[in-house]
Length: 139
Image (cartoon, rainbow, N blue to C red; front, top):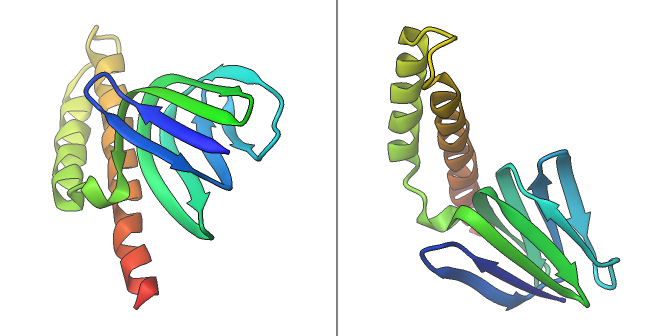
């Protein structure tokens, strides 16, 4: 099975995989070889894929995932591998967004955008932290 992950800015992955798990808008789902063909919308969360027995993690937000004849194509609005994420910077962004959201009235037009940005920052932090745990486990 092959995984192709693309954002508007770049191609992040084109690799053979054993399985992939992704954040659908209705919840997490998994794809194994010879999976039925389908197309679904992605939410914000962790995409995990396994290649050569090792798990790899990507923070994704929005987009679509298509399975077609053992090719899994992800067209994500944004995506970063765990190793690319600066966890301290993600933590600072999450704090700034929490404060901004706390100061913003719940009925303000920017509230949904702030809440979505907060979710993306928290996801980046969680996925980025996986890179540190994976490196520690490898030693």
